[in-house]
Amino acid sequence: MPECQNCGAFVTDAYARVFTPRDVDDPRVCPDCQDKIRDGANVRTARSPRNP
Picture 1 (cartoon, rainbow, N blue to C red):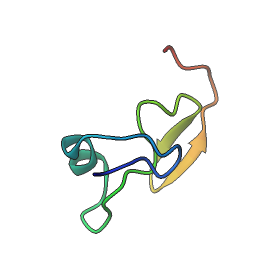
Picture 2: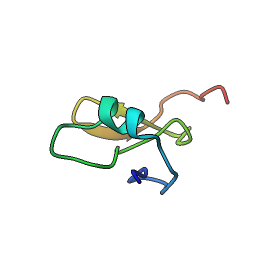
Picture 3: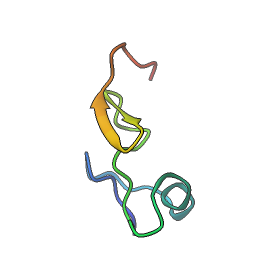
Picture 4: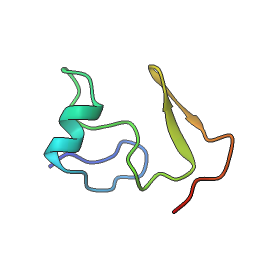
């Protein structure tokens, strides 16, 4: 089962397939990571608050 590399939360296979490169099984961040966002090839802290 895929899981978020940041928080360890479960993610669906479909989410992992869409948001990870071909050679990576687990996404870097997930929708549960409200304080982190994907920024190109990196993950960074959000500059503004996210709506839950």
